[in-house]
Length: 83
Image (cartoon, rainbow, N blue to C red; front, side, top):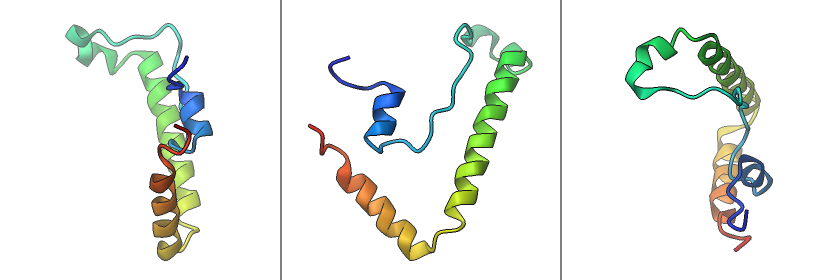
């Protein structure tokens, strides 16, 4: 809690663009990785991730490349400001 490393904290600081929720009770068993790919919960989170990426990319497509560079520079310069 003191480090403020939760997804909500990182979004508040502007370090992440989006938070993709995942099912709370779902964990990947590394020994069964191939089986996990067909798990309905895995498919659901993959769909959420895809939707988030598509939404963010569609927003970025509306911004001129020069402005994207400025925004990216500002974002990275801002990292660490809250310390």
